[in-house]
Image (tube, rainbow, N blue to C red; front, side, top):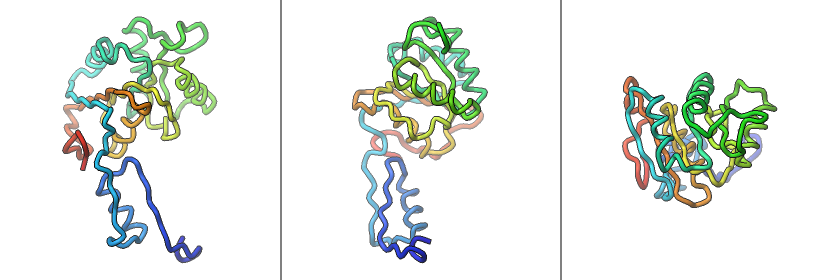
Length: 211
C-alpha cells in the first residue's frame, strides 16, 4: 500500500527486541531486498540483567520463597507477569496475605511504596491509569500484571521481573524482562517453567544473545 498508493521507496525498520528470524520475516513482508542488509545487535538481553529459571510444581510456594529472600526481598519496584487475569488477582492476594509489609492497594492501605496490586485489561480504564501512576511514583512496590500493561510503561527503576507463567513467545519474554534495569543498574529476572508445558518459546540460549 505504501509503495503503490503513496510512492514510498525507502523503508527503515527498527526494533529493540526482535530476534534475527523475526527481523528477516519483517524485511520480507516489507519487500526489502536481502542486499539491503539486516542489522541485529549482539546483545538481545541487556548486559545489566541477570536471568534465572526454575521448574516448579508448586509455583505459589516457589514465588513466595523467591520474594522472601534477597535480592527480591529488598527490591522497591518489582513486576510479576501472569498470563491470565484471574491469576493476577489471585497472586496479588497471595503475596499480600503471606508476605508482611505488602498490604492491599487502597485508602489507608499502609505505608506508601509497600503495596501490591493486580493489573489487567478487565479493570476499568480509569483504574488502570491510577494503578500505573501509583506504580510510576513508587507507591506500588509489586505490580502483578498481564500483557495489558503494554509497551507504554517506562519506569526506569524497576529492579526485578518475575514470570509466573511462560510468555507466549520469545519476543514477549525479551520485551517484558526489558522493563527491568532501564536506569542501567543491575536487575534480576526469574522465569518459572511449568512441568506440564516444558521449555516453550523456542529458548535455546540465555546470555549475550538469543536466537
